[in-house]
Image 1 (cartoon, rainbow, N blue to C red):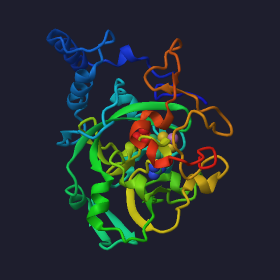
Image 2: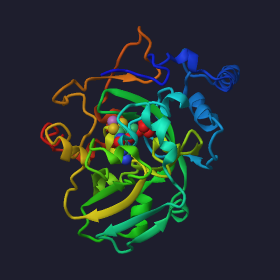
Image 3: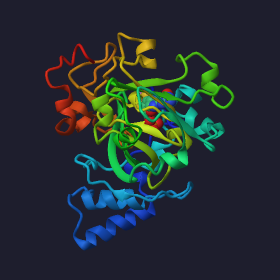
Length: 328
Ligand SMILES: Nc1nc2c(c(=O)[nH]1)N[C@H]1C(S)=C(S)[C@@H](COP(=O)(O)O)O[C@H]1N2
Ligand SMILES: [Mo]
């Protein structure tokens, strides 16, 4: 895989990414004696980073820190610049730098989401209303792409479970299907055949109801940038990144397991579950290690990929007794 960045070279190693504000926070925390480790990146610092690291380009979001188990990972958050310039959003092209360059054409206002299928309160709901259906929380999650890179992003959103309870699924609803925006006029990739549009993903009902499954409206204290899936997207932290659909327009409750766009494109490579699993390789490459974006210096070591991306304590029981080689 070719590692590229906007400046045409390799991605900068971390020290170049420290902003004056981060340096200030870091000094302040050390002075207070809160800094937890020699690396200077303890829990207090991560939270200070996440809650203050506003790049200032987009409207601010208000939120409370999350109290959900596993909602704040112990890793240093990825620099905003990296998280917004190294993206997969095939509707805007297949190169990692395409979404940041092209997603400005996406029209996010007005926006609504259609809720349909086996649900007692179907309908088309405006974004402004949906945003009130849960308490906005900040969660610092790992996101690992099936391609072998990962980031740590402070998201703002609420548990998808809050939305699901609100619309009251019928007893027959066993899965949730997510359909994302596919507008050939504003999305150049949709005019091409990289995938069968619209982009579709799915979760089992218990996965969708898990408190860690986040409906995200913001990141780094601001509304989502378009290249990261504005105005709302899913973030399922224990699954490969492609399960986290961007720019959602439809949520459908169904009794049949949905067929995702990636399964349709290459069923032998991408299964329905797509749980992060270092023991089950992709047919063409290992999934045992990952490259953390921002640690791409020539001497940077790869990190070991963790079972369920490090969220095993929270989600392992969802898959108890399942053969994870078969249900990959
Ligand atoms: N609609 C849509 N959603 C998508 C994708 C996409 O191409 N289209 N790519 C997925 C993949 S492969 C990853 S790794 C994540 C990347 O999210 P990020 O750019 O915010 O890091 O978005 C996912 N959601
Ligand atoms: Mo991905």
